[in-house]
Image (tube, rainbow, N blue to C red; front, side):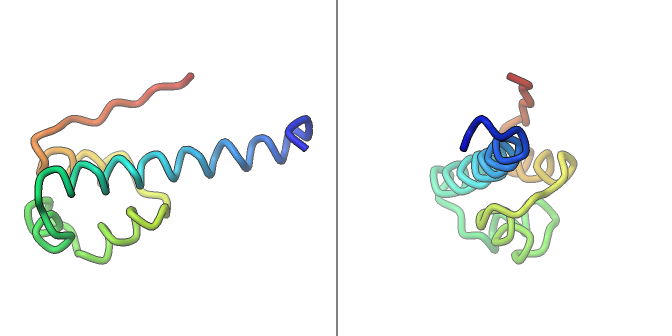
Amino acid sequence: MMQDASHRKAINAEKAKLASAIAVLEAREAAGLSQQTLADQAGLPQTTIARIERGNNTSIETLAKIASALGKTVSVALI
């Protein structure tokens, strides 16, 4: 199945979405913040934090706002 290029592409896209979801969730929990508190500090709606943590796509700009609110930076790697 992984030999099918379109299937491989879909799996890699899903892995990338989940990686950002896990990163946001773990950083928020490590900071001891609720979704609402993080959203307030990042200037975003709480629903945006929930959406990202469920694995939905988001922009680098939104991730940068969240990272800043957590005292972190965003790093992008193409591997």
